[in-house]
Amino acid sequence: RSTGLSNRNVRVLVASNQAQSASLTFAGTAGGVFRSSDQGSNWQAVNNGLPNLDVRALAFSFPLRTLLAGTPAGVFRSIDSGATWGALNSGLPTLHVRSVVFNGEHAYVGTDSGVFHLAPGNSAWVPFSNGLTNPDVRTMGRAGTTFCIGTGTVLFSLQSFVSNPAWIPASGVPVAEVRSLAVSAGIPDRTGDGVLAGTDSGVFWGYPYGFAWTVINEG
Image (cartoon, rainbow, N blue to C red; front, top):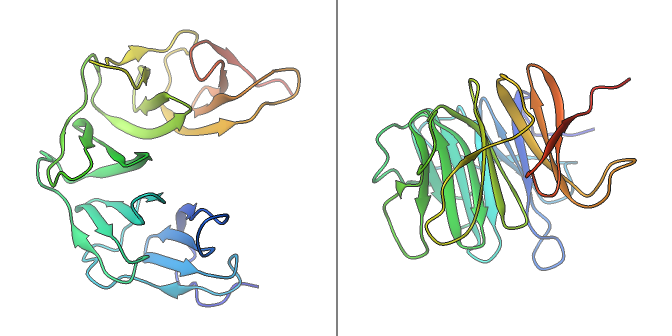
């Protein structure tokens, strides 16, 4: 039984790389960020410097030893495992951050004004929405070298990390609100890694790495 998690409205969980660093798990809740060093048996609030406790998204980068939190008041960064936080909002036209993700040392955030990128060593976000016809980003996920996003209306887009990248609408997903994304190492009767998308029209399987999509609602 977990102790110390005073807010049970958990929106997101992330873990550090257990093979290369201390085993830390972070929970983003409606009451801030909580940290566990024993696989969730005990939790400690780590919100010093975090003025908005309505945490909607979390991402951890092992190479940078950095934790990012997305809130309705913007992005906040911690470089000491959540002990202290500082705002990281320069370049963002909106502070309603719904999702955050790392690709190595590169960080990305999804907002209601599109996707923004923070390069290593930089302190300001830059737009990363080329080809994105709907900027209302609800969720993001990375599978291999492919970066997938889901929006609040018709469009579900994906993109590869290449020079001059552009978002491409997904093929096979109907008009749907994309609410969640997850990378899968394979499901029965399907081979290889892919992406699962949860929508208001059911679950879709994107393979390879989200390039072709089929519905998987049977049963």
